[in-house]
Image (cartoon, rainbow, N blue to C red; front, side):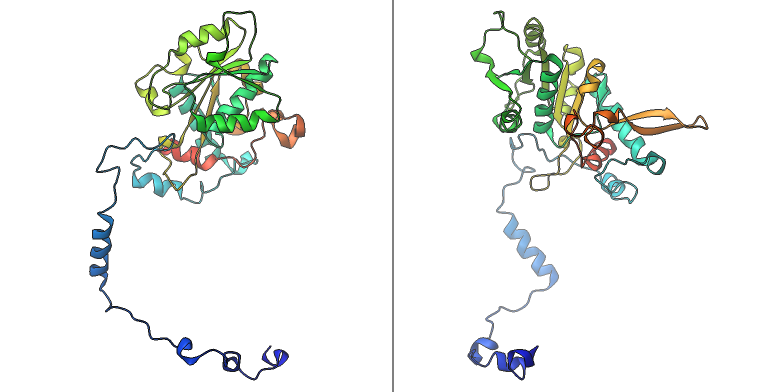
Length: 317
């Protein structure tokens, strides 16, 4: 290479650089021991504000909860460390079983009949739920309650723009008129922690032949009535608070549950329990005719790279 560019050595390449810049004297302080260095940065970090020392209202869907070290150890095992939902059940019974248990856990927590194996995050789960309701009711008019956060609405607007979905503010419509709507979206607990009267809203939209979709906070369901007891048709949530760590913007997992009658329009992968030829319990992906690898552009589910690992993480906690 040197011969090709016409020089005899590497040093000759640097001949035009002043020597004082080739080997500059670095004005460094005396080295610190490991202990001294640790103490230095500890004192420096004490100037930071931490959610452990002050009351914090930060989050908006992402919350820093305690995660036992055993959960982290389990999730990093080679049997689970993948973001893909397996297509070959005969080789993936362990992963499929944990995914099935996740569905069962969420369905029980939400008191809903059907749950999929996970969506990308909470806002996309709500947007997919709105599209799902519009398909079911064959009505593209969606009402948005004031309780839904603006960050979630940004995602919904992106989804609806190219789907010919019409978005209406709850305060701008009269649910006592004769107009019909595909669905009503409500968030409870809402962005600032208030509890909405979901049952009343459900009655209002059902009278207009629409569906009620509740976006909720999963941990609150340990105290509040779950969506299934509020006459909710479809319920969504951000699953990150169930045990997924906060990592500079991700990863997250969306939760989407619904009544059994709507399962054919449910996006996302669904894991079912069956028996093999030896009459032993086994697990497999089911209702795959909804998915894009079979129905292509006509698919009702377009979940490709699944957030399966985050679903397992939420289950282990």
